[in-house]
Length: 288
Image (cartoon, rainbow, N blue to C red; front, top):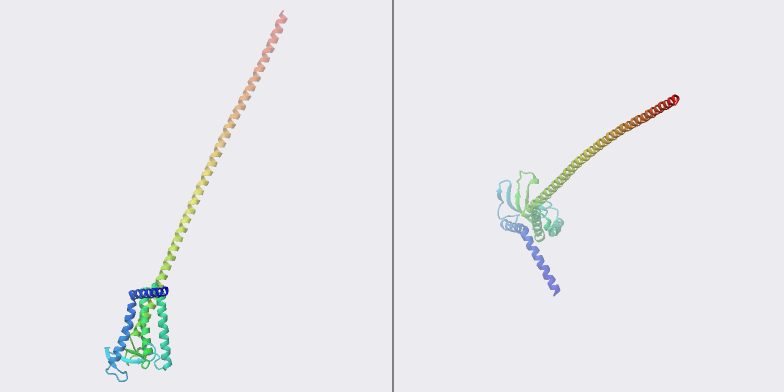
């Protein structure tokens, strides 16, 4: 029972994840994949054998774009087409391994990827598996290419035949690179803004601290001036007290001197009086 329940839970969880994948654009990946397969089968049925086609090429833009049919045994855009069967095996293995790696990457980082990155990976995944199907199941033919670009007057590098899978691979790769570049540029801009804000805050802090230091210095100067004024006032007060005390002392000494002089005068007067009295008494005694 527990084993059956665990299997059912795993299947239910997988189904929910698949529905979430479709909801977030996974349907677009399947659409591109089946569009590639459908166009290949349709062009193969319309033109028949590329050696002796049933119909001639169809011009979409004369001299630039046309529809045709070729079997490519190499890589994308016909590269490596004449390198033997071992190259076809190599390309098939590379397509399979790349497809598995892309699916693993998409499953692991699906929720962290932006919309542009997800749709770019959808295109790459659809193109990779589309060409892998041709290499694995159309071994006698190779990859079916039907989109022709250029003409004989163009340089050989710009003349090629591809399919919808190649278009998906190219567009997806370009979008993915652009998405990474844009994301990197946005992150660099955010980091630069953060650094600028930090620098501005530090400058404001330095200015604030300098103002604080200036205010502290002014307060210290004011306190120093107040102390000097206070000390000067104390000196003046002490000087006045000393002057007043000196005056009082001088007055007291003068008073004492005057008092001593008065006392001396009184004593001298007493002595004179006594002398006069003694002389009078002596005179009276002589008269007697």
